[in-house]
Length: 180
Image 1 (cartoon, one colour):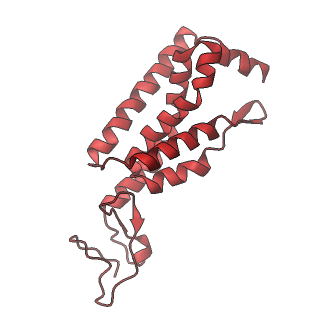
Image 2: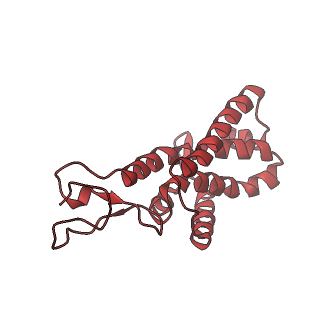
Image 3: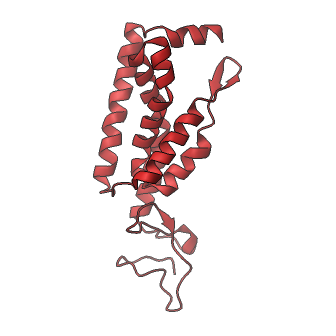
């Protein structure tokens, strides 16, 4: 554990800096491309700021587990996926993790390392964002009922469709779906 702390304080070695830079750059490209590719609406500022600040604060809490550590951010990641358009999740998580490292940047004087490591740590948000956003833009074709159908309302985030209406349709969407 002492080695981990010493490593956090030191600037990144050249090879590590190159690898972390590649991961951070790739995440930046994906975080910008997802909202553009899915034509995601801009998220509401108040909710987004609250989620980013909460996520950043949670990322400061570390639990030591054997030779490593973990942070309790999953409890805030799920609200990010469902309160905002999922396409924005990687960007929100990356910004929050960088914001959570500001204290270390000031304390250790190695902002570059802290930003690069935070970028690499935000990759976990890409998979769920893609799955939820893709399922939100494609109606279910299965016969398992309305609980498997998704839609994306104008207000943002993916939500489950309501139970079938009396007419037998799931919703007033213009696309055909087989959830009724």
